[in-house]
Image 1: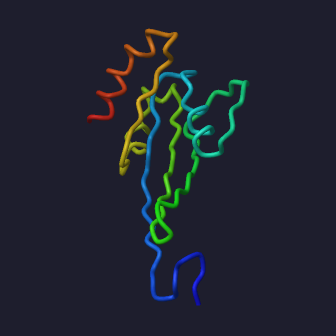
Image 2: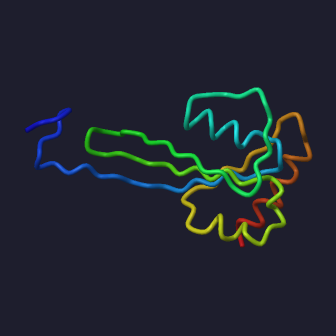
Length: 117
């Protein structure tokens, strides 16, 4: 039996990747996560406490699928002892800043230094 171009003998390969979003508070990490994973955008700001999780599934081919786990780390976590636990096992890290806030850009060096440890 064939479904969507896949016959019973072909196995679907699934890849899973952990992507971390880091940066100062209120720079748009949650907005990026929601827009990418749910194709929505909210005008209201809600501070992330700790970490929020989002998932995005992408079908590359009928036999290859990718699941991205987006970890939205709260901006106040820069001094947190938990930050190392959040970052552990990450496949990618997205450093985020607000283009209208130079300090949030300058602080990326601190975020990068923490991740590099």
